[in-house]
Image (cartoon, rainbow over all chains, first blue to last red; front, side):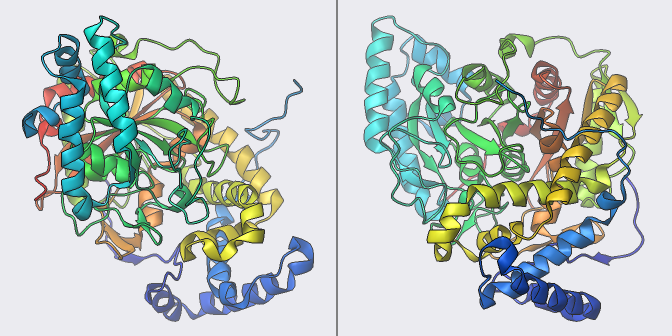
Length: 93
Length: 470
C-alpha cells in the first residue's frame, strides 16, 4: 500500500445538506466558488433547453454538484477511445 | 429459542428445520421478538411483515411436516430491501413519494425466494431511492450500525446489512448500483455479493440506474450467499438484461480447490488513500490467501481514475430520466440530497454520458486483460470507517473526503464493468468496527470468487463474531 506524505482535502461531492461542511470547503477554494456562481447562472438560463425552471433554492447546490462532476470529468473528456463503441448497444428484437 | 441459535447461518439452520428439530414458527416468533426489541435502536426495518411472515412460517411448518421440503431456504427468516416490489406489502423505496405504494406483484427475485420457502420478516430500511451510501433517510430516520449505533450502517442497503449482522434475519435481498450491497456488508461485518450484471433479474426493483443496477444477497456467510444466489439467479423475460446462461449450484462449486489460483493485487488505485487499519487487515488477508496456496500477481488496470466521472454521468442521467415524472409532480417530496442529484442530472451533457458508456467498455477490456493474468482481484471494500450519523466527512488514510466519494470509490469499477464482486469480513479496527475484503472475478464466474471467499472465511473466524446490541 502506498505511503502518502501530505494531507489532502477533497471537496469532490460537497453537497450542502443542511451542514456548513460544503460551504467551508468552498470558502477555502475561492476559484471553485466563482465557478459555481458562473455555473449557477448558466443553469438558471437553461430552462428553455431543459423544459423546466430550476427553483432558486436549488441553484447553488445543483451548481456545486455539477461543478464537481465537471472537475472530475477532465480525465474522462481527454480520453481518446478510438473506435470503441458504447457498452450498451441497441438490438432489434 | 436461544439467541445463539438465531445467530447461526442458514446452512446450519436448514438441517434443523428439515429434520424438524426446530419449527419455522418458533424461529419466526423468536426472530420477530428480536426485531421488535432492536428496532427502536437500529431502525433496520421500514415495514415489519408480521402477518405475512407468520403465514409463511405456518405454511413452511405444514409443508415440512408433510415431507414437502423445498430446499435450504425453506422456513428461513429473510428480509427484503424496501426497493423490491412485494405483493400486498407496502414498498416505499425509502421515499415519501412511494410511501403509500402497495404493489400487486412480486419482484422476480422476491417471487423466487417465496418459491424457495422463505419467511419474509420485513422490508428493510434504505437510503432514499437507493441514491446514497449512509441510509440516513429524511423520511424514515437513520438506520444504525449494530457495531456502534451512533454510526451509519452504510448504504444504500443499510437496513439489510444491519439486520443480517444483528440476526434480525438470516439473510437479506438487496441491490447494488455503486456498492450498495458491498458497502453495508463491509461496515456491518457480513457477506455481500454483487453478482455479474444480468445474473439476477432486476424486474420489480425500483431502478436507480438501469445499466448499473445489480441484485444480490447479504448473508452471514459465503455459503449462505451462495445458497441465495442459486435461488434468485436466472434469466427472466421481464428483464431484458438478464442472462440466459446456466445457473450453477454455487454451494457445490464453492467447495472447489483454491490452490494455484492467482490473486490479482492492483498496483494502483485500490490501495491508494486507505485507512491504515483497513490496509493492514486486507494485506493480512492476502497473506492468508497465499498461505492457502494461492499465488499473488500484480495487476495494472488503466482507466480507474475515470471511474468517478463515468459513474456520475451514467448514474445521474439515468436516475433523472427515471424520476422525470416525479420531478414534475412531486419534486418537493424528495430529500435535499436526492433532489440535488436529480436536478444535476438534467444538466449533464449527452455527449459525456455516451463517452462514459464508451469508457466503460474500455474499462471492461482492461479488467478482462488483467483477469487473463489473475483469477480474482482483491482490495479493501471501503477505504474508511463509517462516520457518525449526520456526518459526511471521513478520513481515508491521508485523504479527508466526502463519504460518497470514499464509499463509492473502490466499488464502482465493478458496477461499471458488471463483474461479480463479494465483500467478506477480514478483521476489525482497534475500536471494534468491521473491515471488509473485496474479491472480484470474471463475468459469470461467481463460483470462483465464492470459492476464494469461502476458503478464506473458513480459515479465519471473523464471520463468527457478532455484535452485542443492548
